[in-house]
Length: 193
Image (cartoon, rainbow, N blue to C red):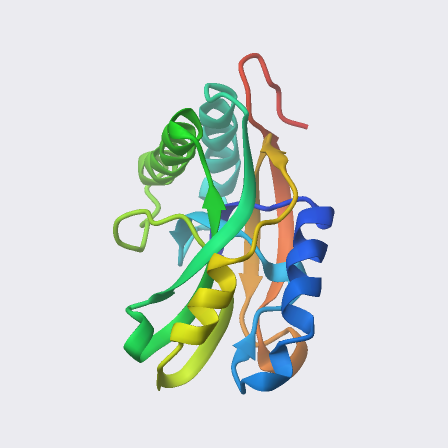
């Protein structure tokens, strides 16, 4: 299975960002991320054996329960690898120091949980972001980053970590289709459902 562990903003936060971008999307021929696929990836797991799934969920749940819930909002933005030759346009998260620490620990814990189950974790250093668009070739996106820098969405609390399966090519226009496998509560004493 192709899985990832993510923080998924609540619908009202995603809708706010989607409305902000909607009136501007026609100005660029980017491959815009569908609203129901907006998330912050904590750990990407390209190949998870079925036999490891239960242990992975258990370990992820224990790790999430050890973290504190924290407030944030979608705000600001940037581009990967850089604005002059971007392949990805992203929105950021507004985090205070305790929130930044908790988010980093959620990512580290998710990656450790996967590794302990014998699952390979792919990706470099954790850089929290929400991908809003992809480009087919390197593109200058300075105006778009400036636009995202002016954006600030409604506040919300990170209280859940979500394990999602990605089905390549099964979504609209041959994009991935995401299937939520489980949501795990964040916070001391939290129990998974």
